[in-house]
Length: 142
Figure 1 (cartoon, rainbow, N blue to C red):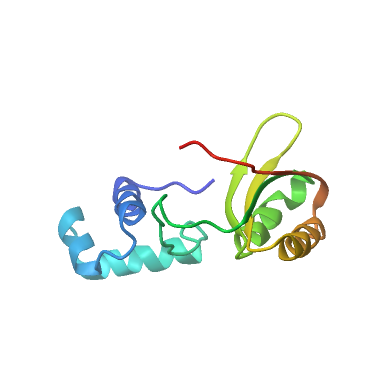
Figure 2: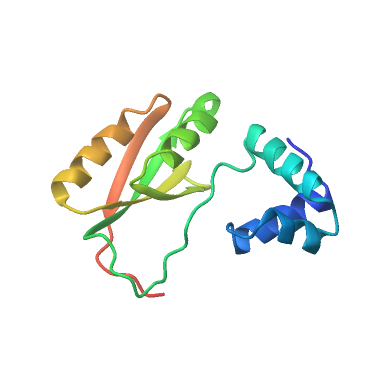
């Protein structure tokens, strides 16, 4: 397991809040040099701690027509690879590691049932996935 110091943790917290904040601003808030921030970001990316930078969309923006939760069983040895492939799929908006019968829950979005069917088929074929169960979301209350 990778150990993160307080500067790494602070950097990650700031990026979670706003991934578009400038390196100069990050350095100012963390009270370190710009070079330190750039080096730490590069190291965290290389170590797979930072997997990418995303955009958070307001809840009142129209969502794709088809949304679902896919419960996934995965081989223990392949779990990290399964998570990486799920996170790399543009239709998977979140991946959750769980306890109980299922190892992972993937939140899926698609514009049509036809494209949703293709996404589900693709995800089921990921090496290390042993079983799946998919539930369409009819409504959400946030």
